[in-house]
Image (cartoon, rainbow, N blue to C red; front, top):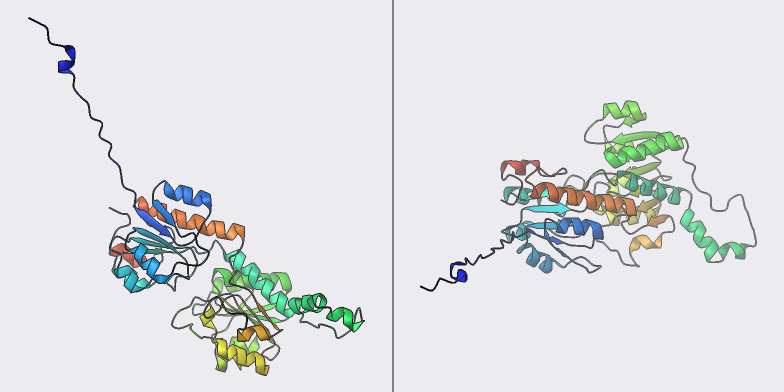
Length: 357
C-alpha cells in the first residue's frame, strides 16, 4: 500500500489579522508635527491644511463622520452641528475660551468639551502689558513719526512737548476679572510698575488681595471711575456681552486707557469709536474684535491713540505649543476612558462615561 503523502495531512494555517479601527478626529487647523504624530498613534487624524478656518458646511460634513473634533474659536460648534454628529464624543478646543461651542447642547448629548486654560496666562499677560506700554508711551505714534520723516522735517532733535506719554508709577490699574491672566497683569502692575491695583469680579478673592496688595471694588462703575488703565480679562457670556458700553465709557477718566485682550464683544465697538472720537478716554489697546478679521478701513484704524493687533494674545511659540500639548492630553485621557484634565462641562460625566466604548 502506497503510503499517504505527508502533505495530505498538512494543515493550512490561516493568519487572521484583526484591524482595530481607530477613532477619527478632525483637526480644524495645522498644529505642530510631533503633536499630530502622537495623536496619530491613537486616532485616525485628518487636518484642515488651509490658512483660513473650514467653512461651516465643511465642518458640519466632517463632524458627521468623526468621533472627535479639535476646534478653534472661529469654528461654530452649534447644536445643529452637534446633533448632526452621531459618533462625536469629544470637542477638544484649542483655546482658553469656548463661547463658540453650545455647551448646554453638548452636555445633553453626552459630548465632552475641553479647553486649554492656564498654559497661556503669562503669554497673554505679557501682551496686555505690551499694549499698555505701547499706548501709554505712544510707541506706534513715535515709530510712525520717525519712519514717515515727520521728525526729520521738524528739524528739531528734541522738544519738551514732543510725543508726551503717560507715566505709570502711582497710577491706578483697574482689572476687570481677577482670574489667571488678570492676576498676572495685576502682579506686574503692582510689583513691577508701582501702581495701585483695584479689581472688579463677580467673585471676591480675599487671599489674592493680601498677596498682591490689590483692592476689591464691588461695582464695575466704581472701578471705571477710579482707574487710569482699565484692563479686561473676562470670558464672553450673556452677562459680559457689551459690558463696556457707552454709559460705562462715559464714567472713565478722560486720561484713561482701555485695554482688551479678553473677547471682542465684551466691548461695544460703536460706543468705543464714539468715545475715542469725542475724547471720553485717552486711548485704547485692542487685541480682540467683534467680527474678526477687521478690514483695513475699520473705524478703529482712524485713531493714532489706538494700538490694534490681530488677536495675538497667545501668539508665542511656547504658548501655542503648550496649548497643543493640552489638546493632546485631553484626547489621550478620553481615549483611555479617563476624565480629560481640562474638562469644561463637568456634568457630562453624569450623562456618559469618558471613552469611545
